[in-house]
Length: 183
Image (cartoon, rainbow, N blue to C red; front, side, top):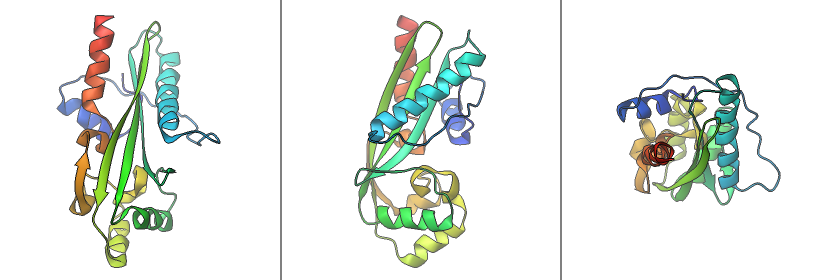
């Protein structure tokens, strides 16, 4: 069972050959004071998975949460177009990290892990940022961009899992499932 309404996560899992049902969880995504970005995504992934598990106690539940980190700051989904432009201005012309917390839980077993991918953006002119924000694509994405969409033209390099940047590190999910099946 997938504890996420993200169409990107659903597409990634389906493309990798997994069958699943979707059940969403309403979890407060406000960072806790002093919390690292790694702890933040791990906490949210587990909270989402456990919220769904509480309603489906016989299920194996996968929860995930993705964020972008630059200069130690968490860049979640933008609040509005101005916020998206601000985020993209910070990312352009440099590297940043994409972190995804992944939690796999059942009534008797649980694991939480975090995947990290480094992403480099080319420099962007203000007009390019404005046009990308106007496309609407950044509005529901951590860090205000989707690597699988129009922002791909600005990504010059990645180190780590591409699927992590999209929203779910599929190889990590596979490893956690294998661990669960071997337990």
